[in-house]
Image 1 (cartoon, rainbow, N blue to C red):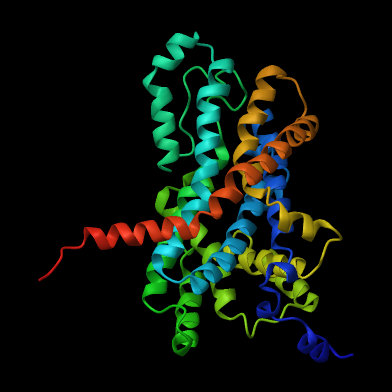
Image 2 (image 1 turned 135 degrees about the horizontal axis):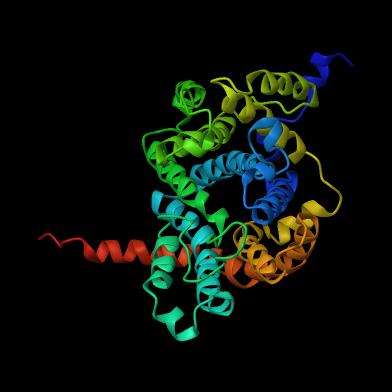
Length: 371
């Protein structure tokens, strides 16, 4: 079989978009776990320089996992918008996917874990404006690094309660922009090639002139960074009927990725390799994992609950190694994530039609009645 024949017989992205034909859930679970692994080194040492891939790529294992998260999110959220009945329906779906579990996590950390590990007496802790500032700032996505009074002050990564949450505002910003682009016709079949060309140009150029050191990024630079990955996934969805997924392209894309490191196109090179590699991995069934992850999506729960658990373990056992921290934290976080899916996230997603209809009804009632 020639390379051309093999490529032509490979599945298209459009062929694997239904959950029973892809392993997106497995990949999201794996990426959330890799963030946990990476953060074990960050929290234990107090610096991102200790994370596994940092010395070689200038990016940690966790950052690479988040890149894949955003690429897969771009594909899946683009599909969600394309299949939604309206912008309201799409907005409700996105809100229900993020905020119910986030609210539970933030309140549990602030009002259950916080007073236990704080250096302040309970009375002073609950009277502190910093406590309520943490809740408001975190739930409004203003920041993912708001401190809690007296919490984790002596840890190596001092004062950070849940460092993973900082990416959520950028994901929501990408959702908002996608909704606006969708209204403007991004998913109109007649405009497909025009839309794909325009989006491709944006993805290819938006990361140019980013500072070489990620520590120098502000909001705008971070947003541009995440746009490359999220909209790389959206672009893949737009081209789903033509995008063939073959292992034959992995080596060339890897070489592009390596060649682009520390250049202006580093993020584009990383997006192409990580994105295509993720799609290729999604064509595999991974034994029983595909079915398990489709039935129980623990990825978001792992992502949002891991940080406080890891920091609490380090508060209890400051000398614990990153490897042991990873294993113990995962054993605690996985049941929490499964419970979050079964009792918070999944029931919340079932409310989508109810909430959508309520908003539509409230909107109609709010309109003035003309004679």
